Length: 388
Image 1 (cartoon, helix red, strand yellow):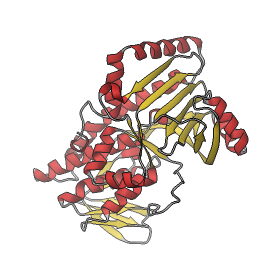
Image 2 (cartoon, helix red, strand yellow):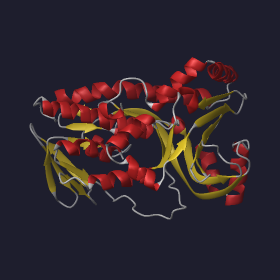
Image 3 (cartoon, rainbow, N blue to C red):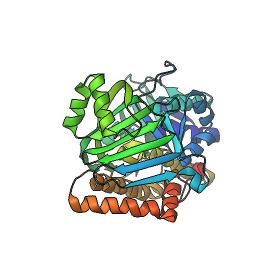
Image 4 (cartoon, rainbow, N blue to C red):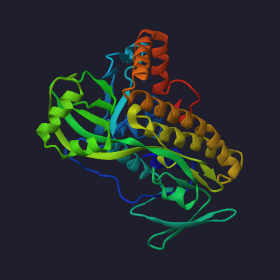
């Protein structure tokens, strides 16, 4: 998603771009099927996708707005409620299947004559010189470029081949994902319950179903995956405290490990990292791909400015502007999500009292709540051009 967004941002400005993809996006699926992987896209991400010409196509497939958010603590009963109407916004964001975003961006790429989507294409190695990088693919094909961008995910091959180190740690949690149908209407509200073992999020889909992200201990995730549907539905109903009544239907389930990860450098001469290749964050606030889209938009700003001023787009001096724009912001978000995870995913009495008091105070502090909503939506702060 992030690499395609960057290519779409640069293509109208005459850059010659090759997009290397291991596999083409899924083009068709049953209308009643929901992708296991979804993202909660902020207003900033929506603006980026609108300006890239992908959002309209996404809405033709499916985007599901959520207008409110309700968060509560399982061990203390405190809660906080966010309502987009309070800040004059139509929603707090959209729940969108990853394959919808991928396909819309891929189709948009196909409209540019100066973009070569190479698929399937697998990277083998690259060698960097003073002015260009030579990229060799598994099939022996070679490409020459002034800038190589690694948008290849948390286990980035580009990052590893470049020798860029990263730090972080695995969380003692795996995320179980599935699409479920609750007994009651979700009210276009995102529901999240924090438990000592990890948070459970129920994210609204426009047909009344919910996409769930259930973060829990690895052993518990394994147990939940092994349950038959009836027992799983019972366990999920209990974990959600019947906030939407009984959970009556579940589709296929998937599970993936969670970790915090941050690259020690985002750039080298002739190379840049964006998205999960640069940073991986806990999904409790759904910020992962939103950070990636902001990376793409910020890098586009830097490259366009370099071209206007006659600078090399691959020079370290140019690319450092991108790193300075994004690294601090991303580190702050990673630290905040890590702190939230540690604060809420435990049953230590002093911390339990602190978080419940914090939820209660924040829920009654209207200006603070409004600030949180605006910040989460991407309506404040230093934003790249495409996100404004």
